Length: 94
Image 1 (cartoon, one colour):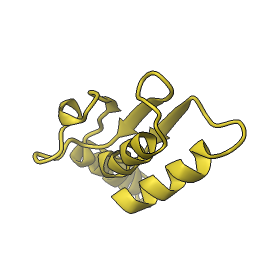
Image 2 (cartoon, one colour):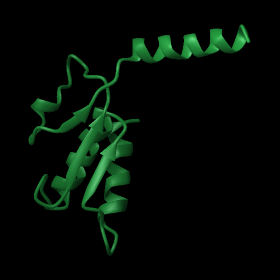
Image 3 (tube, one colour):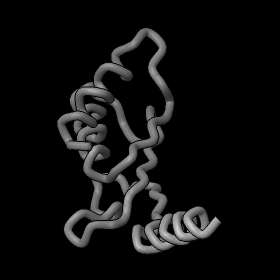
Image 4 (cartoon, one colour):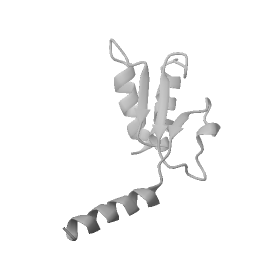
């Protein structure tokens, strides 16, 4: 999940004969690449493409600081880990 991978994937998608009208990224970092691809192709967010990112917010990369504030989802890694641990403990105990 890198900025460059987001860029390359977005270029492949957006250069198709029937490009998508929305992209959902698995991270804010990949979203940086999508934004760059959109700009390089002369398109706009949200005019030509809707962009949603999923990621825990990094202190140095916030969705509101993008050229167009992004819609994002957020999940707690700590809570996800706790749920996995609970399921594992339940499975071990029968």
